[in-house]
Length: 133
Image: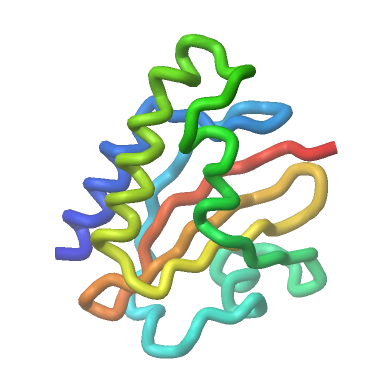
């Protein structure tokens, strides 16, 4: 079941790029047996191999996709075409994962992790990067 969720996330995010000062693809991930305890900033930094001193911030799912999940005047044709794909990706996240949390790790070059709990007590989601100067 959990592998199916990861596969759906891979398919839904395939070809999409996160819009920021740079554009990065998404990667689906699965962390087995990590959902027994609540997610904490410290736990996430350990799971992702970041130093425990790294800056980390939790944001809303809609906030992360605010520039790509709805059509904007400044979008180019490809970005406009991708809006329904981003909406579909968000729907898959919400349909298959519970307790979804979004973390921004670092400064300027940020790692983004969108993480939720699977029915089998694993953690799954997608990660990407954004550049903000």
